[in-house]
Image 1 (cartoon, rainbow, N blue to C red):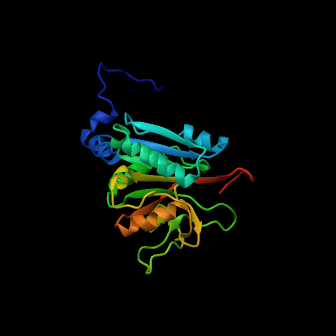
Image 2 (image 1 turned 180 degrees about the vertical axis):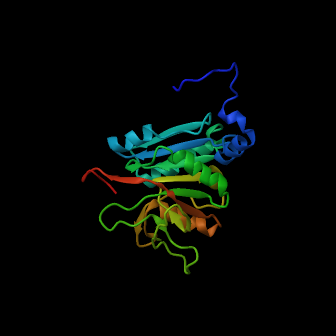
Image 3 (image 1 turned 45 degrees about the horizontal axis):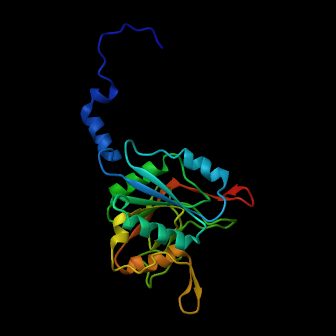
Length: 239
């Protein structure tokens, strides 16, 4: 502390320029409903490196955040059954957002706060994901499909630093969905399903869902400013 002569009153930095403080608080969404349910599908064990990042995940101040772990279920079944339970619950069904956080993803400490801000700033999107890559050398960004291309496809798009990129489908390692999406009775159920058959084709649970979501006008984007690790336990590498 520097030598100083103290007065009896100090209004504080936030109160001195109240207009600037109000602008900042509105931009951060501090006075909006940001209630969030975090779903983690955990078929087996969860890597310590992933859990360490979750414990450092900052919540928006004085907002409701609930964590649900779906244990012992295939990933598509885990998401569908957990969200069905949420929609049927009198309290949880009123939460505004659902964040999917997978057992091997490592979000930044401010990832939740930032992805909520992104969703509040862009109500045109039903879901916004953080940027993460498929595992292994040559991994691609999980920014699946360019809506400007026809016919609809899920080819990966290249990321652009700090850009918000619209896509046809997202991964689910760190993706924020509006709960209202799952209250749309027109959507196919189960929402999420891993398929591998001659009748349904081959699809991961996330792109299976987005093939239907897109048909009903729902849009998605990836916020490339939110960089999420994808941890490979076998190699002890975060991709």
